[in-house]
Image: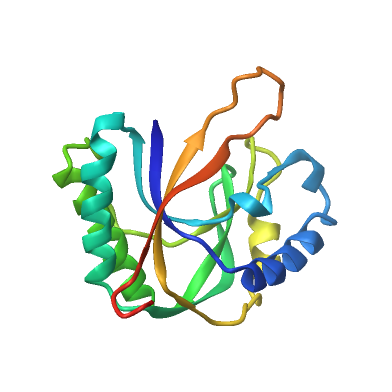
Length: 189
């Protein structure tokens, strides 16, 4: 199964971002973008790709430890950016250092469980809002998000999510995400 560790924004934070995204969808060329669904919004901490069912128990135990070793921390959706013409994203503000630490711990949990991971790269927290196909440029959308500042919340859990890829062959169908594990951060609950 395809899995990733993530931090999910709470409903109130998603509401704020949805209002900002609705304004972006009125900009010229917005109809050419593939906008992500609100229920799929997340900060990926560690993408594990394909994981054998037999590995999930060990991975879950290690992710639980990683969560326990990380204190709850403040975070807010803030600003935006783009990865070339491929992805438009909302950024994060608050205790981003602890978010990065949690991402490192989730990556280490996967590696120690025997999962082959991509090379280590500097973690850049982002929540994907839309995907492009080379046109139009995403700069105007990122610029329009520059002043976006969501309300701060406390990140209190680490989530393991399964990505169910489309199987119908219908153009535009997107993956469905299913939470398969949640662990409170140290001192949370």
